[in-house]
Amino acid sequence: MTQILSGKNALVTGASRGIGRGIALELARQGANVAFTYLSSPDKAAELEQELSAMGVKAKGFRSDASDFKAAEDLVTEVVTTFGTLDIVVNNAGITRDNLLMRMSEEQFDEVIRTNLKSVFNVTKACQKPMLKQRNGSIINITSIVGIKGNAGQANYAASKAGIIGFTKSVALELGSRNIRCNAVAPGFIETEMTAVLDPATVQTWRDQIPMKRGGTALDIAQSVVFLASDWSSYITGQVIQVNGGLLT
Ligand code: NAP
Image (cartoon, rainbow, N blue to C red):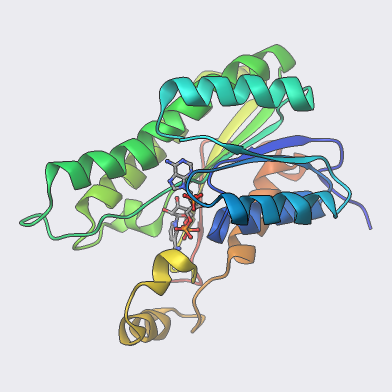
């Protein structure tokens, strides 16, 4: 079978669990070498590194806080030193600190903006240098349905994810002439550890509202990321692809 990412080098932030892990595995399945980051799950990261290596690609996990500007610069330098080039960047690391605005603390707001939005600036800014040199690159930012339609109890998260969309479109305009593409994927309700903390009744209500009558999987998101990472999408930039089972049309 043809592997559409054969020979490409990818970096995925926040891949120790959930959607990021699914993306890393699918990129490798399509032949890409995979560098990935994690923050607080070293055992899961070591497991993933082994799993990826067993698929016959080069793989390495880096403990790196995506919200830290200097750490992101150092990370990209290390990745380029280890892998040679950097063709694909997936900004996936993200957190939630949900609360109604009435109860939301300044810290809850700042933490979510730093981890979800500033991280995208940090890593994209760092990877633009090697990509400009190569005159080639695909950057994929994981936003959310919540960044498009808002969600009560998630003003901080919605602001961070809407910010990612504006950032993505601007970067696409700035870097298009250098053959560097920048797109976003907006997952709907994807069943991962992030959503496992919700009570089962809430989860069932979500499923019932989805036209396709199921929550999404990490693989559903990973396959759209593979498409945007590959040359099959070589004329697509500045777009937000919604992967949500029809939840928002
Ligand atoms: P998850 O299961 O909670 O996993 C989050 C990942 O991000 C973990 O690997 C975690 O690493 C990493 N991470 C968190 N903070 C980090 C930081 N500062 N630096 C580096 N890595 C960090 O979440 P998920 O559900 O897979 O979500 C992944 C992305 O999809 C997020 O951006 C989320 O907003 C978005 N999304 C999810 C859904 C959904 O329904 N699940 C819907 C829409 C959008 P450690 O464990 O090592 O700390």
